[in-house]
Amino acid sequence: MSFIKRENWLAYVLVGPVLLFYAVIFVYPLLQMLLLSFQSYDFYTPPEFTGLDNYARLLGDRELLAKLGYTLFYWLIGPITIAASFVTALLLSKLNRGQAFFRSAFYGTSMAPMVALAVVFMYLFSPNHGIVNNVLTDLHLPAVEWLYEPLLAKTVVMSIFFFMNMGFYTILFLSGILGVDQSLYSAASLDGAGRWRQVWHITLPQIRPVMIFATILMTISIFQMYGQIVILTKGGPFGSTETVFMYAMNKAFTDHQMGYAATIVVVLSALLGLISYGILKIGEEKE
Image (cartoon, rainbow, N blue to C red; front, side, top):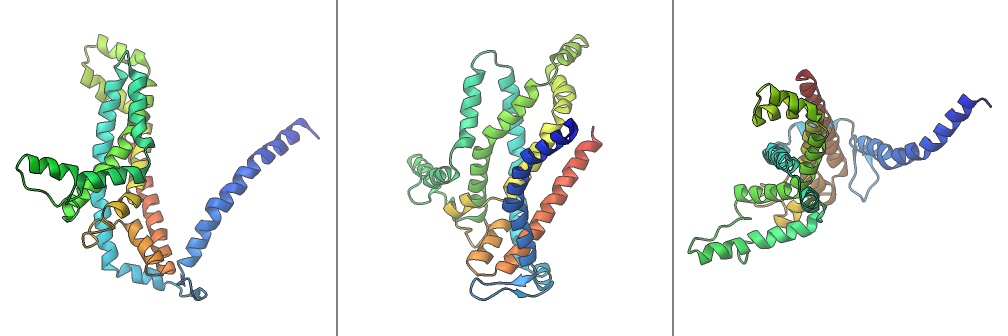
């Protein structure tokens, strides 16, 4: 056996288990979900092929369109999180001492269990015995129905998302900023460029791939929000805090409409793929 053939055989042996794991854990469930989207299944009777009925139903589902609107509203916290994370990373990159401590502190917020954070926020913003309302009462201000008003409930959910993700994206941007060639800043300083011009014309263009990755990851995370909403509001009030993903989960495990839920997830996955592709193309055009 030649050396090249031996190397190829070794490569297949090393990569094979990973590909098998990927096929079993990801590819097979995706294919099953795609097949289920053409069926009607309620857990109790065998699946029945229905063709494109689920997709036709999806086009006329006004409640689904409402949940999509709520999900897009949640997306507003994305640019805020990215901007705050970038500014924080920029400030941390200027530290000569204590940078390791602050990196650990910020990243620690993203390592906290989501359920624990949701419970903490529930105690903070509980309308009856929440800490925030207790403070307002002590200041002789009226208590606020944080989780019973649609807009306020969405704001609390977005606050959890911001707190959970800011640390991770801060460290992500910090790694990109620290990787920028320092000679570029030196040359810009010699040309008389101020600090903010250096950030705009050097830092941002140099970390554009990181920014694109962060935007795509942030978008997917927002569309997949589920746990914190279930703990805080259970989708209320009046379903105003539900996302598309939560709507699909309710259709599957509450209404026992697995086929229709699979259809929603398939379309949602395709939508996220198109959005991600659009973000990539926009990033390429600006390079």
